[in-house]
Image (tube, rainbow, N blue to C red):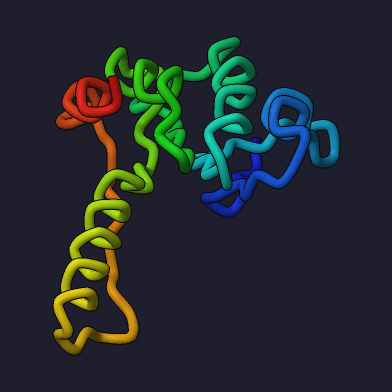
Length: 131
């Protein structure tokens, strides 16, 4: 009888080992979701998962950073998604607020530029945006 690992494996290090070689009592647990704190870790996890799992069918694979290689894997379905930290939007907002301040206008203390969820629906568009 296989035990299910509680839904999410949080990546901190050695993701390939955690997915490919993690055993409990001689049985391999089944992870349903792998969420990595950055895309470099998720790319290692993708290699381990490719050996016997299918992303989008029996496991979800998500990272953070929207690296080009990760976005390409999202486009092809080898990853479920990643998170794009919109540095271009952040820079644009900084210029906008600087211009307001230079013209003497009062500005807020904080401005938020949201992260963008990258999935198969928009990963190709984000790739184009970054190139």
